[in-house]
Every structure is written in structure tokens, then in C-alpha cells.
Length: 424
Image 1 (cartoon, rainbow, N blue to C red):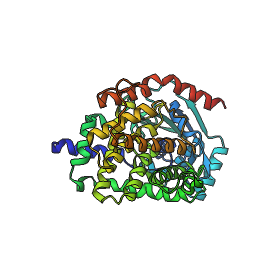
Image 2 (image 1 turned 90 degrees about the vertical axis):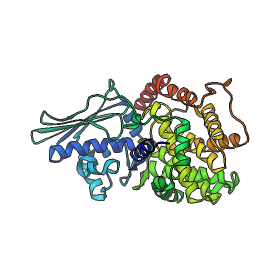
Image 3 (image 1 turned 90 degrees about the horizontal axis):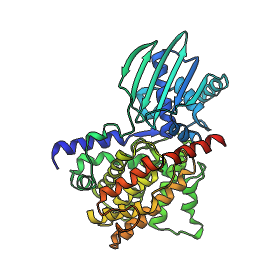
Image 4 (image 1 turned 120 degrees about the vertical axis):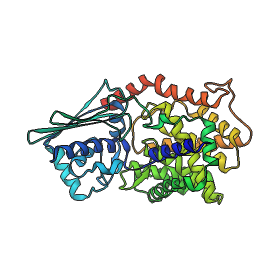
């Protein structure tokens, strides 16, 4: 692979695999609020938000780290009170008990107004107007979680990129396909990609916290105990470690996880099955690094054509990357990786996203258990054929079949899911 392309892919991974505290949708809202507040220069007397449906859906039921509260109002209030835009998706890392109490008061004073922006070009769209002292500031994020497309203060436009559709920001500059992803992960000098071990460090810490119980539905802790049903096995380790990290994150633990393509749960799912299995088989550090890169870059590749937010659950994408990485750790090559991906697409396509919430750990557990099964079948020489369902002989066309269903065919499903959630 040419050096220029290799370096471009490294930049892409570093842009898409970043730390985030809490669910990335309310974090992105906090980020936009923090930016508008900074431009205003004072704590806003009023904050008005217009949000795309997927932002509302993914923020309704998720815990906000360090608050013991769920949903958008506290994320908005804290973004205004203690948020710092320079922190990116760790915008709320300065939250403490004093800030939470101030946030409660801010909410009680009815300073926050939230509406659904039904005509947003992107499924990820956040438009914030902050007002105070007779002045105003506006910040708009669209297309990806940290992508500011419009900034304005007192009517003076400071930034205007124009509307953007869904994409992995900056990712479209790097043309990926399955063969390129595999070649990069397996041939790039390991020193150039060892930075991916930070994903292991962060997400392993989240898993260890989740295993103690007390967050979300504590699925990871329940699986770890096994109740005599699963046993002490690599499959149990993969399921419990991955779901435990999600338990902690969705339950509002004040910790950072390493995200992938704007999703913390996707970052966890692309990381923890690889870390867990690599530990069980005593894989070398180089094998672990390459497997993690294969998993994360496969997920990035799939998201490039799916879009940031969709009706398709992100665990489908990330567990597909994890399955490819498990094949690599099992000693398989590119043919087996392709087989595992096809097996995943044949199974999990169609799993809906009904918002970020503690129960995401259950979907993640389903995804990673399927990733193990798909890898095992691939290593046994079994691959779902092109005569079955949406599978094509060509691996990249198979992936496009998956993403077109999530991006296009499930749009009405997405609208109905949001309507059901809002009307409860």
C-alpha cells in the first residue's frame, strides 16, 4: 500500500476513534450548547434547540454521566453551565455535584425549549440558540457529532459551511473496500497503528467498572456470574465484558470510552470482543493491535455508506467488525474474514435502533455472540451463499446491501420508532 494512502487511513482512524464521556448524542448537544454559550459570553437566560429525530431518539432514555439523571434537559443545562467545547465529546468532564444541582435549578426555571426539526438534511442535526443580556449566539452541528457547520453571534455570521448530509466526516476522502481494510490492518508497520491500544485501555476500564454491577441492567455482571448456564468460556468472557462496558456507559458512569464513528457503544463493541478473546488465547501485542485495527476500520468502512445515525442498530456494524477481527485472531485470512462478514449480514440485518438506553447492552450481547458464531462458521469453511437473502458473491456489494437497507429502506421504520417513543 502506498505511503500516502496508509497515512490517510491512519488520519481517518484517529478522527473516527476518539474518547467520549457518556452517550455521544446528548454529548454532541452539550457540545453545541457549550459553544453557543462561549460565543454569548454569559450563562444564557434562554436556550432554544431544534433537533433531528435521531438525536431526540438517542438522548431520551440514556443516563448523563455523573448526574444520576437521564435525557436532554440536564445535558443542555450542564453544557451551558460547565461545558467546554475544547473538550469535544468529553465536553462534560468537569461536572460535579455542585454543577448538577445548578443544572436542576436551571431546568426548573424553564429556560430550555426543545423541538423536533423535521426537515433536517442530516439525521444528526443540532441547532442551538442561546440568549442573554439582549444578545444571542447560535451554533449548529450537522453530519457528525463534532462538525460545526454554522456559528453566529448577534446576527454576524462567524462560520457557514452550508448543509451537509450524513457521512463519516472526512472519511469520504479515503476510499475504502474490504480488501484495503484487511491489507492495512495486517501489513501496516505495527508502530504506526499501536495508538489503537488506547481503545483497549479505556473500554477495558469501563468493562471492569460495569462488572461490579450497579449500572444499567447489570447484564455484564449477570453473564459473568453465569447462573450455571453459560460457563467460564471465551464466549462468556466476550459477552460479559462487552455488555458490562455498555452497562457502565448507558448507566451514566462518569468515565470516557473510546468511540467509533461517533458512537461509544459501537466503539465498545468493536473493541471488547477483540480484547477479551486476545487475552484468552494469549495473543501477542502485535496480534491484538492488528485485530483491533481490523475491527475498528471495518466498522468505519461500513458506516461510511450507512451514515452516522440510522434505524439500523450500530451493534450490527461494530459486531461485524469484531467478527472479522476474531477470524484474524483464530488464524484466518482474507477469505475467512469475508465469510464471517457475510455470515453476520445474513443474520443481524434489520435490528432496529430504538434509542440509546441501558437495554443497549442486551443488543450488544446479541451482536457479539453472533460475531463469535459467524467467525466459527467461517473458520469451519462455511459461508452463507449468494443464493440466500441479501448476500452477494462480492463482499463489498454485500456490505452495500446491508447499508442501503439501513439508510433507505428503514427510514419509515425510524419515523415510527420515534413516534412510538415520543407518544408513550
